[in-house]
View (cartoon, rainbow, N blue to C red):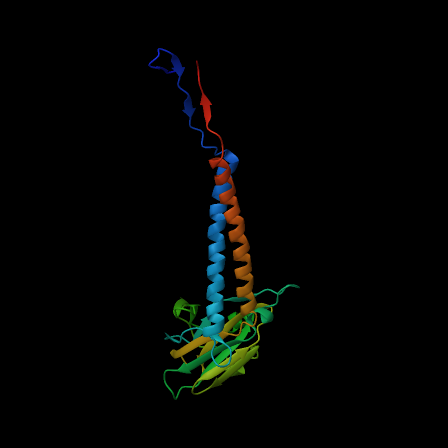
Length: 251
């Protein structure tokens, strides 16, 4: 242990401070968990902000939140949605979450009559078995894929197929509204005469009646998570900063 000598010749021990930051494994774990929880809380608050913005600014006059209008075209016989799987539970039901769904489509050729229908997926797959079709994989971006670009015409006109839960057809803009319920579904757009070469503009929308409550829940949950995250980080940091430094001295 180092010592110093005073001007009078007395030997004086020099205390040595040993660094000890006070961060135990439990405190480090708390800080890390709090940091991660903070990120989750910020994501929840951001989602609440988006939900509030959409609920207040993005609804049309009929109350629908609607995707952008995109052009869809295929040389085959049909354009379909991707699979729509809606599971019913005693707590949540698809109709209570989505309200109503709306699909609007307009043929590029104004003289062409189009057909829009929603059917159970198994029945729609049987109707379109061996029929060339394109699949809309993203309504938001207007992206389509062609799992079966080649194939023959369907055996029946779409208006003659008794498979649809709801359907509309005609020239000009066609608007289909549907109240979703549990099941596996497929939305199908075709030329009404089942001819190849489907080309149209379309958008999809939904009334989400509880979006305001969803935003409120996200804000409340995000706020609680943020408080918990703050406590998980601040408490161990404060306690570590207050841990006394270990000192030793010798005469």
